[in-house]
Length: 406
Image (cartoon, rainbow, N blue to C red; front, side, top):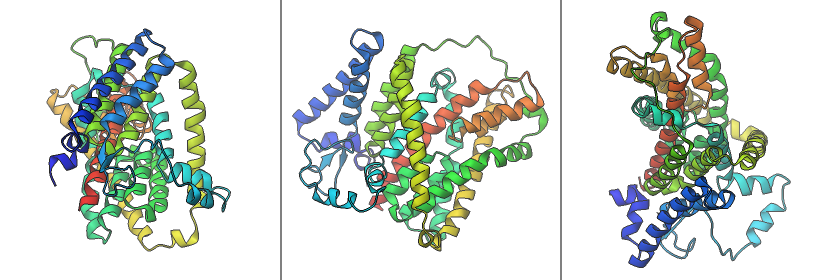
């Protein structure tokens, strides 16, 4: 394994013809310029912003394929194949069960995860990440402890590499990431893994407050953070710039997760650009429809034979370990920032590094307000929360890129 294989978006630059590489770079830059022109209103934003993101992401997110028949070459993307030649097999399977089209066209290719990630992008605010970048990223990294520690534990309990990575990513507390990882690495277990993940995520409201109270004494939970200077206002243009650059760089690093990166950052850029109709479409239609069918499909896939799989008990244990260790890591990250800032920080923010948006940020603020109503930490918590989403996606990209090589 080498860096070109791990970071395939960059690695493919050295495997393709020179003219293709130059064209990719030009199109990435052109895509960024289209987003910039659309956000400023110089060009039609309804077309230019989605087009620019798509152009930058698809040319950055090129990866190696072991089966050249998929794309016609050794490299390709996970976005779209413009020429589909064989449709009989697809049409035959769609005629069997009435929910089969939804499963085939949304779960089989991870579209459902991308739609949910779009919804997260619409409600996210990257401004807090830009205001407190060091604090947000440090806490988010610490809160990935469960996603890392659980992997060797899962291997020791008898799961293979793909199953172990899928169970470990539950520690990121990001449903779409669990769905994406399990479908890519452990499709035979994606139903129980995803059900367990969403079950535990719904229980974080009840469990994490007790962990906060156990690890953080009242005098620390009530700390009011004193800002040394007035925080600068982050403009919509700066947020959109962060979105398109973040999307491009992360797609280059981890092209296997490029559809997820594009979905999240595109939706956020749409919100920040004031495209109200698109924002309402994503939030009111895409997010709720995807969430509804996610729950429905997980329900109908939950057959007795699936649940009776002996690995389900192992997954239940691993999911609990992953989320607990991540929460402990996040709180430790909050304490780390507390000491770095000479005790001028509320360590309760650490729990928000768990990327369950915006649940863990709300839990942090609620626990702080119960002790001191004058302590407002939501801006720090949301920064850590959004960074948690990004770092979970990065960990997912690493697992999905590396595990098939092991």
